[in-house]
Image (cartoon, rainbow, N blue to C red; front, side, top):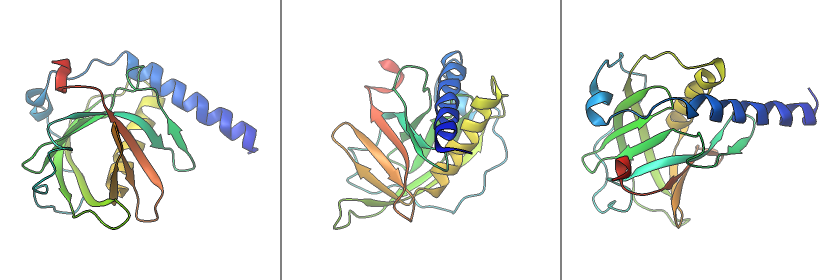
Length: 182
């Protein structure tokens, strides 16, 4: 496949994701995420989050980019990219893929000399709703895999980025305001 064809295919994938996720309603909240739990996804056991991580916790982080496996695709937050993460101070992690809710655990290590924090994310149990289309289904698989590959977190002025152990950017998120738009 030529580079141009691949770039067009990646763009179509991102646009399809936006269209698919735009029509999916956001879950009502933590209560809905706890409903209809699926068996646990594979992931390392983790301990609760790190004390002093208030800048990260109790905020809804909205997706602003993801790694397709071959390239990083930026997304415009609030324009169809409906996936988000929520880090609780007790070490629990909740999120939404655009189709399904999940609840797991997270652990953040001490900041290193490069300004990155080692992180372990275990998405845990997930609801089993069918995706609106194949593109949304593929995005969900990629999103969860990118979370599981994440090994470090870099805080930005208005967001966070997650990198794998090879230093490749996996996901980026922005903070748009209080959870649930309150």
